[in-house]
Length: 216
Image (cartoon, rainbow, N blue to C red; front, side, top):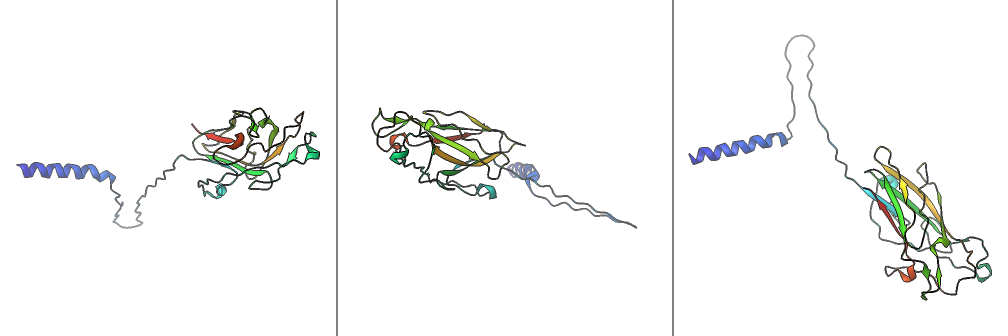
């Protein structure tokens, strides 16, 4: 009796597993004249949801090689004394993966619209709390690379920027651009001497901007 019950249990489990097995289809036709035999194969491709953000150094997103790169670029403006606060925007003198002051920016998402914001801990300073340069003095100009529309750059602020939305087409959000940073250089009176901002994980003198892409 026990053996019979165990056998039934085993056969029941096997029958439940049959739909999960990959069984090849076959078809035999016989008779005179033209014969047609058909067989079928079903395919399924499972695509995961992904969200990719690149600002500066990064992987070759246009070829599908989406990888994480921990390198952080630093854009530097070294302003000559004779040009200080003359109202003419000043180009970067160092930094940028696509030229001086030029960063490659890209968003790739396959789960709907994507939003992008930039945040800072406050105005750049030179180590003296009262001596600051607001992030509104750093402008960003976007130019197209591969997408039909250049990825707009959030307007930098002492805190949280405006929100940029990349609208998905057929479920995919993709825009890229070359972002060129410049120093507006129109503060009156002139800023106090010193090095404002800086790099590294310690966020020296509020020098770091954090860009965040969100796909709900």
